[in-house]
Image (cartoon, rainbow, N blue to C red; front, side, top):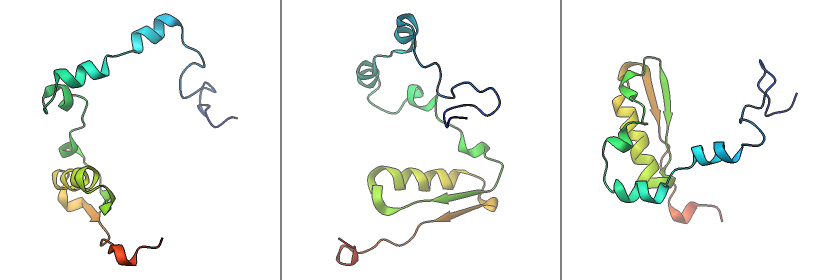
Length: 102
């Protein structure tokens, strides 16, 4: 068995090896056009996003200081919106620049 095979069906889990021109055309989107049409947070961005408030199982949320402007903030906000009694957040302290290995 190959790594990209589904264990149950034996088919590629990444889809067909080759797509027809019609399938490729159907899969294309105008990404720059979408970004220009939706410059601010609106329903277009929220529709594909999960509702983390519906998480009903314990969660271990791990963050790091590496992406302060984006990843850390989103991770902390996600943690704050899931069921707090069954969740744990882990965010190790930042390493001062003088102590980082080079």
